[in-house]
Length: 409
Picture (cartoon, helix red, strand yellow):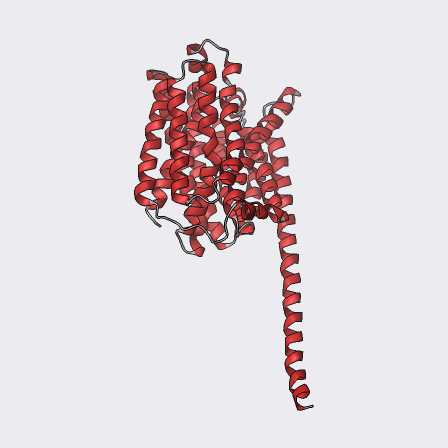
């Protein structure tokens, strides 16, 4: 695999760290800025809002920008956003810094996936994309716990300054290692928008929303689930969440390999496994050892479906993949918000801490249904084009037989 993938993975590591670290720093930030924890929670939502807005917007307005220059610009924006967060004099400035940090997130992963896939032969594209995403999953194992610990001991501002330094390292890596990739001829916004005329692209985006909403319906409330039902102490939850990161890393690399072999079956297998694991979680949650094991399995199943989702939307928008791939990142964040909302709804109904897992399993089954419908549509279209091609060959053959007779006459 090209060394350039390391630069993309470092970038993904920095992005993953800043996305999730705020959850661990909320009490410190709220105390330092003299605000409530619910108000400080807007700093998490602000980042997600930046991703949803920035993913399609930045991808759309930079369609004619060289890919390497675009990656450098996006990481520069990311670095500026985290630096602003570190130096913010008050809550409003910190919120602005979080939104600014989130803006390049989706566009970077969208364009980065296209660049990663373009640097390898077709049989290894999904693995290349999964190696880039590995930076994000490793951030959950190492980056987020380390950054949280740093913030708790040296202050939350030190965390964002450190993430800014990671951004500078990523910029240097991209500048030195990522090759210049020429733009496809005839590119531009109109061509990128043409991808959204495809029903298959919309089905894939819907699969992403429901599939990953299934994960976040549970993951958003995993801490009280582990403490209230499984009986973990507060200090042990961080270790269990790191196990989720281990599972996510394994699943991501496994999903990349499987997607290179058979893309649609890899996606269906990942989503199906996710539904089973979430149902299993409702039982496993009642003992600490089985709860910890199922958290690992949840990470594996969730991210085994992640790379196939990204590759499928790129395949269905193959002539204009950058904007569609960025839109898929926005879909991931809509899934985050929607899953967390649904999990909160079932908890508010007094159905117990295992209820989000049941709701998540239902969402995963819907994802399987949408992906299956896409596969059946794909197969029907292939049969139709095959019949048309066969009919065309018959006409050509008939024409070849008729024309000599015409010339004789």
